[in-house]
Every structure is written in C-alpha cells, then in structure tokens.
Length: 94
Image 1 (cartoon, rainbow, N blue to C red):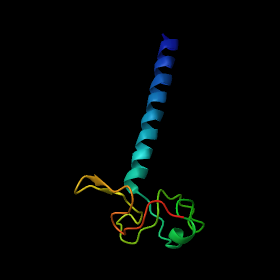
Image 2: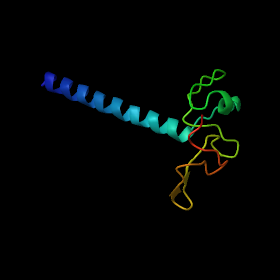
Image 3: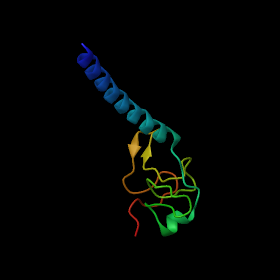
C-alpha cells in the first residue's frame, strides 16, 4: 500500500514538473521580453546582447511593437518569406 502511494506521488510529481515547465515556457512566450538596445541590429543580429544578456529571437525592429522583426501578417494571414512586415528589412542579412 505504501509503495503504491509512493509511486503515485512520484508520478504526480513528474506530472507537476512537466506542467510547471509548460507554464514557465508560456509565461516567457507571453512576456516576450525585448532587448531595448538598438545596436543589436548592426552588430549582433541574432545572438546575445552584451548589455543585458538577452538572447534575441530575431532582428531588432524599431517599428515592431515587440521590437523584433516579424514576417507573419496576422491581419491578412500571410507570411512574407523575404522581408519584415514592419520595417521591410530582409530576413537574410549579411
């Protein structure tokens, strides 16, 4: 009986850890932390900002509400494979 209860506790603990991991991921996604340092677009692009250690997910964009380039237009349900829908800069940069 005790062994069975311990197994249930362990399995529920694993389930809770998995749920907690999912919740943490969702919180990060919803917060969408944005690095405010504009130099990233010129010097770093996709990478880690040396000022705040934020790991960027994309190129810096002044016009975007998230301050990162976006290639999907939700209003028209269209994906622009070449250029940011806010600033027009290309996704592939040298």
